[in-house]
Length: 340
Ligand SMILES: O=C(O)CCC(=O)C(=O)O
Ligand SMILES: [Fe+2]
Image (cartoon, rainbow, N blue to C red; front, side):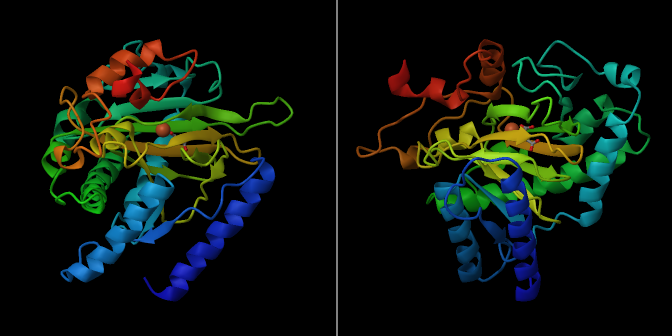
């Protein structure tokens, strides 16, 4: 990306960051969140790739998240996904209710409020996406372009997830191929979130309660700002993630913390309601297959770094979820070997 474009993106990011800060957060964590140009990740020159890997490694270690630009996901796929989501949520309640399901294991699920008592304003649609052929027939047929638009986005994002995890594990000193097979055959769990415009008078400011995601990474597309993050050493200070046009936000999930044997931490995040506009976000969670156990990478366990976490699967996480409503704990906390 030419420097001028990069500068422009950063300037917008800062403007949006400040606007958002004035509106919500009480204090700010040090430094802006990293925005990484990953255009040279696929470069034949290993030195060019290494520089990007280094930036990603630093962002993962210090912030637990970063945004990517020049990521190869087309603008038309990103716009199409937001359109499909917005058209879905605009449908009459009865049509959406056809996807309501009490079983959190259902491959497609619509709901109007979360059970935590905090995220009351949000409605959401969740569905599996990888491999697309296997799941797409369970997706909504209305709006008519939903499957096409969301499917195109899902496939492009899955490809990006493979590239990013390749770089992240390389940054941990592992072979870039370390997770590729597991991810290729793994879960892609998409969560489409619809937040109405918030009203500060009514005091409804939090759209989605603080949590970390399962999986290795989450790639998130947001229509406007609202996502806030706090990393383990941020002292509980929330940092708004600016909505940079064309950028995608990436955050680390519980299974990456496990795989890295604690060298990386999963990211606590939440969504704030915008007082000036409604908002849509599309989270794509990338992990191993439903029943595949994920443990610490053997290469990262030695005498100085004893194994910190028990193995677990996505399935184990789903079993844990209903037990984690009142006093929220990151799933990964329950896997700590000394926490038993
Ligand atoms: O709306 C957002 O920005 C956050 C969504 C999210 O964290 C999720 O769906 O897991
Ligand atoms: Fe999340």
